[in-house]
Structures are given as structure tokens and as C-alpha cells.
Length: 345
Ligand SMILES: *Cc1c(COP(=O)(O)O)cnc(C)c1O
Image 1 (cartoon, rainbow, N blue to C red):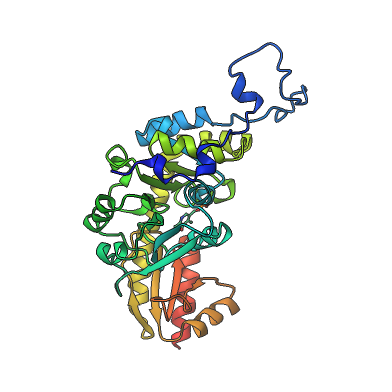
Image 2 (cartoon, rainbow, N blue to C red):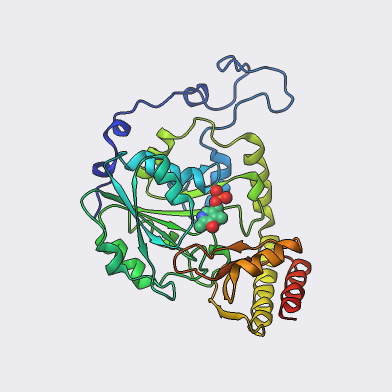
């Protein structure tokens, strides 16, 4: 089993973190004269809780994961960046990731000057764990997995993922941004068994809060403490903490959005199947579908002309000729379907 400490950068292990006023004293006081804040309640004059305990308690109640296993950040992107800053020595360590996948892993690797090793999925976007592990060496600190995967939409096979977890001694990141749309269980239930596992989730997709920027990382308390040590002291502002706390009450609304979007996805698939220039519709467990068409660039540009914007993945390896289409509202989906039918003439 992975020894987390041995994976951490030396400078991070020895780092003495910034100690903010709200770390030294917590609770109620009659006068807060410790943080040079403006005393007049407007009502955002006070610094936010650096560790977002109230929000974490609410997330704990939903996810059944103790608050000590939760990190909250400015989108999942903050957690992705922290993985590099905590575990990867620039110009020395490397990470291994499936390809194609979410673009931020590579961008974060490049910013942190960490070698990013892409291992292509099979043609049907399934994972071959053995091939992935063949690209691991002594300097590989992290493996990035994403399920359901973006941009392919498929779930990674449980047994292939388990093979990675059982045979890799470094950190395994499992990005579950689309888990709410998936029929399979989250990897959260495996956290206690794998102290090297980090599960990422977000409020940006099913919860409808992309503009608010709140991402979650779930991991062993050891990893969470390292993230807390390195993050900006007040990384999640008061507006975000309060708003997400409020929206957590509306889980039934989220569920009905998900149900509607899944119905709409099936309607979209049925309509797309009837178009002569659609070659493949890849199976999706997310709120988008990847579609291989005759001429992706031409169709992309045609849709842009009609002010309908999809994601052109034509230049991504294994996605040649593909468009990634987000499932929109029934009205938006109608616009798209009618436009595509008209393209056929
Ligand atoms: C959309 C998406 C995210 C979300 O990132 P945020 O920073 O939380 O908005 C994360 N991972 C994947 C794979 C995504 O597609």
C-alpha cells in the first residue's frame, strides 16, 4: 500500500503554512480585533472560514464522507493543481493520464513543469489498465483517470480501475465530474480502502453552479491535510460557501434536472441516429454525447453560423471527426436537431 509521506515533495513536507487569524482563534468573540478587518457589517467584512466547516458538514450528510476527508476549492481545477504542487517535483517527476481526457490535467502539468504521459484508451475509449501501468516508472507520482470520461462520455470498467488501484503505489485521481448522470456508484466508497485515492466531484455540472466555482476532493485525511497546507488560506469566498450551503437543500431539483437531461440525451441520440452523415454515437453516461460525423469542421462551422455552439474535438486523437454535444434544455436540443436535419437537406 502506498506510503503517502514518501510521495510528497520535500519542500511541502517541511513547509510551515501561513497561519491566518482565523486559524488561531475559532468561535464566537465579543470583539474580533485580530485580522485588521473593517468592523462594520455590510455583511461581507469578515474573512471566510478557511476550512469551510459548515459547508463540509452539509456535504458529509449527503455523501457520507467525514469532513476530515473533504477538501473544497475554487472548482475542481484548484484540486487538480494542488495534486501537482503537493506531489510532483518540477522537471523530475511525471504523471500518467488516460487520453483523450479533460484538458486541465495537462495544462496543470505544463504550468508546474511536470512531464505528462498520455496513454491512449482503446478505440472504443475503454481502459486497458496493464497498458496504462506499462508507462509508469520510479518518477511517476500520479495517475489521472476520469469516469464518466470527458470527452468520450463512457464509464471506465470497474475491474480495470481496480487493477490500477491495486498495482500502482502512487496517487490515483478519479475525476467524477459527471457522476450524477451515471448509473454506476461513485468511487467514494473505496476511499477507506485506498489511502492513495483522490475522488474529484464538482458543483459545476448536475448542480447547475458552474458560475459559483466550487469543487470537491475526497481523500484520506493525510492528503486533505497536505492540500490544506498548500492552498490559499481563504480559497473559497463567503458568497460561494453560503450559496452552495443553500443549494444543497435543493437536491430534489438537481435530481429532476438530471432525469430530464437523461431523457433529452436519449431523444437526441434517437434523432442523431437518423442522420445519414452521423457515423457513430458513442455510449454516454454523462450530460453530453460524442458523435462521429462525416465532416466535423464543416458541421461545426455550419452550426456556428446558426449560433449553435458545440465542441469540435476533430483535432483530438481518437476523436477525429467528432463533435461533443452537451445536452441542453428541450428548446436548445430542438434548435440543434432541426439545424442538423436541415443540414442533411
Ligand atoms: C467540467 C469538468 C470539471 C469541472 O471543473 P470545475 O473546475 O469544478 O468547474 C472537472 N473535471 C472534468 C472531467 C470536467 O469535465
